[in-house]
Amino acid sequence: MERFTQQQLEVVAKEHQLGDVGFGSDRALSLSRVNEVAQWIADSMVMVKTINRSAWSYTLKHVCEMDIQYVSNGEFITAAILLGYQHKRSGSNCWFNMGTGAINAARKRQASEGKR
Image 1: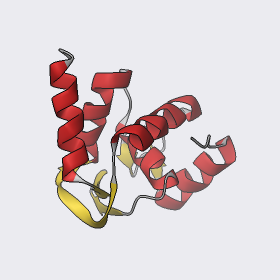
Image 2: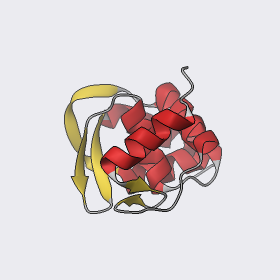
Image 3: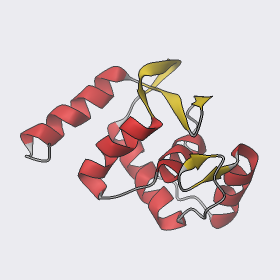
């Protein structure tokens, strides 16, 4: 899994006006948390061709949190963008081209592990 640098994080944050609460925020993001979320996304999600409007970033960050503890919406969004996911913005949140099957599999696994 590639590790992102502070410079990469800052470029994406500036380009997309991302902070810890998501789009339109100017509060700092944690590089270590962005990298941890990126690893979770790489291990748990699947990139599909089209934007999936069944789960948006705020929902997905909660799925991620079941495995790695608290992450901000902005950290989740930034990690996904750095990994090359497409997104469609909606206020401070967005949708990604993450497959429904992978999202449901993560939830099912978490439930079987007593995390849900």
